[in-house]
Structure formats: structure tokens, C-alpha cells
Length: 579
Image 1: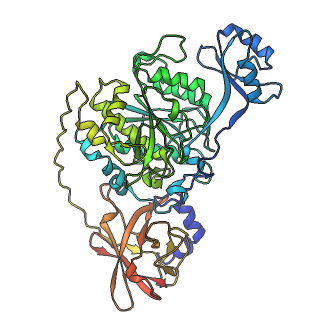
Image 2: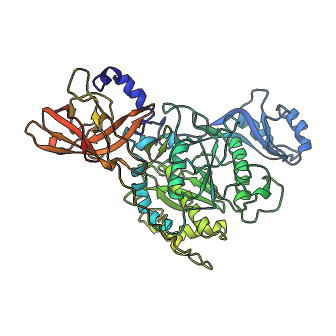
Image 3: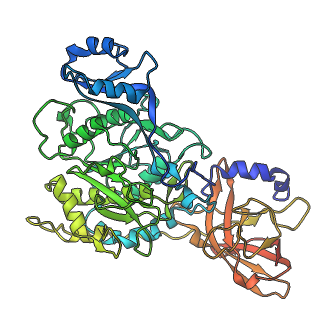
């Protein structure tokens, strides 16, 4: 049967199957880092009037359709269509100069994007085929850096809801199942905030990746997915305002307390907007200011908004992170070596750094992928905010931010505070008692089952050669140990094998699988296993990605490769190694 796989597992077929596995080759659309984000929705203006009764006269005088494209609740804030073809900015200037002072503000309907849609894509702009798995997701460097295990001894974020305003989520992903509450899709205006599109178009998977990091840091919290970016990664300030309103009060009834306590916004624009800034001031305030009611009532006052600072690599202000509003936390990105990431926007308005380089998280289709950007730093910080809110529920929003910023790791960068979840939880704010550690229950030992069948490597038809591909270029052998096409620091080739009878338990990761190669002199070379996962739609077929060792460098020969699973070894399959 396995020899017949060679006919089935052609290169185009393999690439199609891999789009649904943990070895997905996601790649976000990239432009130049720090590129312009000054776009507006054509032919639209956002206008706030002193009173609703002036709408008809204003529309007639300034050539606007008197039937609004949208109205913000019952307030005199409208999204209006320009009917005479005049440029948006020109019409805004005319409205602002209204001689009768009927216009409080007027502005374009500015466009928002995910920061990573401006140049920082999966693995810092490089497609990365080795997806990792749940074990690597948990064991990666960022949780260790922020001392997450220490924080989890006291709280895991129970009782807190984090809204994610992004591209939507893959609600079926194992890392998110059980963590989600109902959300909404403001891009398509329906109740299904799922990711839409493909990895070839826009920042597909961005929201799933962000949500996975919140679930990693605050697994006891609930996540409310709200889709505000379309399949091209574009959203407008009006959509964002509607989404913010929904996040704090989904059912419109403040007595139900179903709104988010924390909101993550891994999105940005280079333009300040009056509408969104006003809404942020009201929703983030512990005691909303008196005045006109620009924002609906909420049962959870003092919401904390965590916003990505942007990926400009400079000091250019990016909004909403740069709004400088109490209750808003602007987050830059740090590296594994505790330096400021080169792509991260920097400036005195950024309060803290958070891990944001080469971060592994969930991606659509059930797999895992590596991405870099302040979009990754923000949800790690948002998860930390959720932990502090859970541990100290009486702490005001501004004090939560102060507490996290005052209990950081100090790093030698222009932004000297890097979040430390462990320190934020174990060092109680003034007037509060530290939480009591939660006892860790002793698990009941479960015997590891012995597989009844040994794993079998797939072979080329009528051959003893393995069906094998370079995991980056998706080409067949022969394979060089070192390749310029591989983007890891070691430049070593990752080789993709296919096998049956590799049925991992839910509690297991790829560490239970080992691999080796035997050369022509019967010398054994250990192959490092980096990923094991199922090929979606073919539950009987597994993918195994191994890294070729330096000890095979310079060889020009066939080696016999095998894999072992719980003590049972597979058949040997030949792979050609070239200098």
C-alpha cells in the first residue's frame, strides 16, 4: 500500500495537503516596513453635529446624501456619502469651516490595517514551513521570559473576557476550543467571526495567531472574537468604532455584564481620529466623563485596551496606540535577547515592551506558525493584563497598567520596561493582598499504550526510496545538509517524510518520535525531529519533519532513514545526500 502512495503523493498533491497541516506555509502580504497607511474610504466622511436636526441642512449645503450610511447609536454622529465627487479631504475642510458652528468635527473614514500587513509577515517576512506543534507552542521562549509559570501558580485569568478586534479566528483550532465566547463579524455583518480568505491574500490567520497567544498566557480567560478587517486586511474607523461598542456591551444591556474587561487591538493607522479617540476615553475611563453620550452604557467600566505600537522601526506615531489615553496600554516588541526588536516602533508614548519576535501560535487549519511583530507582543501583554485583573479584581484600570509597568523586567533599550507576568502577580499592588497559590493536583498515572503496529515510511513507487521533500522549497532530493533556502540560523535542511501508524495521544507531542540515518559505513546519525502532525483529511497519514545533522555534511551517498515510535522502529527508506 505504501508503495502505491508514490502515485498518490505527487508534489502538487503534497503541497495541497500540507495547506491543512501544522506544516503550513503561511505568508502574509508584505509591503515596505513602515510604509504609508494614510488611506481613506473613498467618497465618505464622518461627521459629528451639535444637534441631529441640522443633518438635512448640512447635507444640502455640503453636497452629502442626507440618508446616512450609518449613525452611531442615537447620537448625531454620521457616516455620510459625498454626492458631487469632491475629494474627501476638501469636503472635510469645508465642513470644519462651517460658519454656523454646527459641526463638532468632520474627518475621513480612515483605514486601519494589521501592522504585519505593512512588511512583517510570518517569520519576519519569510515563509516558514516548519509549523511546530502544541508542545513547542507551550515551551517556546516567550512564556519563560515573562515567568508565566510563576503567574499561573496564582491565577490563569478566570473571570476575565478579552475581546480580539482583528481578522477573525479559526474557532475549531484545538488551542482555542473552550476559550471562546460568541463574537461578531463587522466586516460581513453576521454572527460568524471566522477567518476569511487564504494565506496568499492579506494577513490571513492574524486574528487566530493573536487569539492563540491570549489563550497561552491567560488560559482561564474567555476570548471574544470580533472581525473588523476584511480578507484584504483592511478596516475602517467606523467599523472599528462599532466593534468597540459591541465589545463592551454585546447585547446592549449593561445589566448583563457580558462585555469584555480587556480589548486587544493589534491594528494601526497613521492618523488620529476624533471619533475613535472619544470612544476610547469613555470606555477606558474608570469614571466616564460627563457630557454627551458618545458611547453606550457598559456594565464593565474601566476596560483596558492593549494596542500594538506598530512595525515602523521608527518613532512615527501609530494609532490607536499613540492616543495617550488613561486605560490604554501601548506595547512595543522585544526579542529573545531582551532587546528592542528592530521592526518595532519606538517612542516615549510606548509604555512597555513584550515578546514579539519569532512567536509561535495557532494558525487556521489546526496548525501552528511563527510570526513576528508588535501584533504578537500586544496579546502577550493583554494576557498579562487579564491575569492581573483576575488576581486583583478591585484594581482600577489605570492602576492595572501602572502596576504592570512598575513591575517589569528592566531592559537596556530606549523603552526600558518589558512585561513580567510573574512579578506582576506575586508583587501585590498597594492595599492588596497577594493571591494564594493554587495547589497543583497530582495527576493519576496513565500507562502509555504500546503501539500494535510499527510506523511505516512511505516509499516511491517500485522503489526503496523515501517519499521526501525539502520542507521549505517542497522539492525532492538529493538533499544538502546546509542550504541557503533554509531560514533558520543554522541553515540546515529540514526534510519532510510521510508515515503511517504514528498515532500520538492528545497528551503526547513529537518528542515521543525519534529518527536516525544509517550511512554506507553503518554509522548511525541522529536526525532531530521538529514536527509530527496529521495530513488533514487523511487521518492514517502523518508528516514527520527532521533536521539533517552536520555529521552528514559533505557526503555524496544514499543513507537509510527510519523513525521510531514508543520503541517500535519503522522500515528503512533511502534518501540521497549530496555535498
